[in-house]
Image 1 (tube, rainbow, N blue to C red):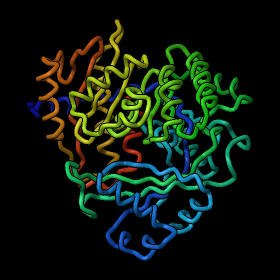
Image 2: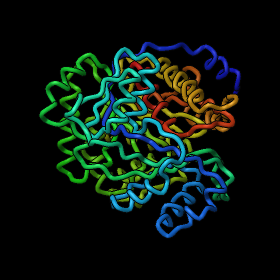
Image 3: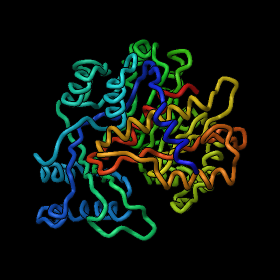
Length: 416
């Protein structure tokens, strides 16, 4: 694949107009900790209280996979927070919080964040960034921020597993929030719907905290009400890595059928697609080829009715988009390109290059589904399939939140 085609596209990508957007529901404070050889070998990480944390961290590092551990025991989680108190740096976290802060910084015409469980520190940071936080004032959240722990690491600190592409990534340790954190309080629903009536995009996550079929059913009903708040409002669901079968069942049965768009990484895709195929976790398969993934992604959209699916990997981004008379796939591709540029900048590297792995994947896709209609744009079974090679930042200093920045930017910049 000719790299010059993509260099030209990246060089000439325009800045889109970003309409009003509402994000929800998980916004919190992140405590970002850089993993070093010294930390891995320290007495702190080798203490009995942190044995499971260290084991899970090393497993994530061996596979260079962004994983999250949801700690149900508040006493155990409190020990983790206490152990790393004062370590690293603090930032706005959670998919909703990260997306809101980023989109406001890009100049979106109005950004609202619905976060019933938000703490005062995070709410203050978002307000300072130009985000309207809902519910307002004293009617929201706890009296303090309980940070999520983000362990960022570079490859090479531990041996990487066979077949894994070495890359910088992160391991997240989070407390379990109550189901109400992912729901609009009924007492606030009408003013919330009025507030978001000018929005054309809704970027939601946090549904990993729902625990029953009733929670998921109620959430689906709320999403339908939200979609009627404004003309043309589209709802995007951003995934997290969850292997709990109860959550996967509720997510695939209730949430996806009422959503318009979904964003996820390759590991999350294997969990969701595998569960849809089999109804259990035995269908998980991280060894799918790029062609398998495209075929499975199209099938997933057909099964759920999703109009848009965005899968982001290290070397390439995949977008499956339902055809309709008003869809212009070049606008959607250019939204991906613009998002890739923003992510590369957010990673704070020293230089950028078009991913050679992504170019190789494009050769495979072209051989199976080509020729393309326009660079990176193919037609597969009534869908546009868009594949672009990523813009890789070299010597990056940040990994936290990059997937959320990518997904939210590409979604809001799209015009599907």
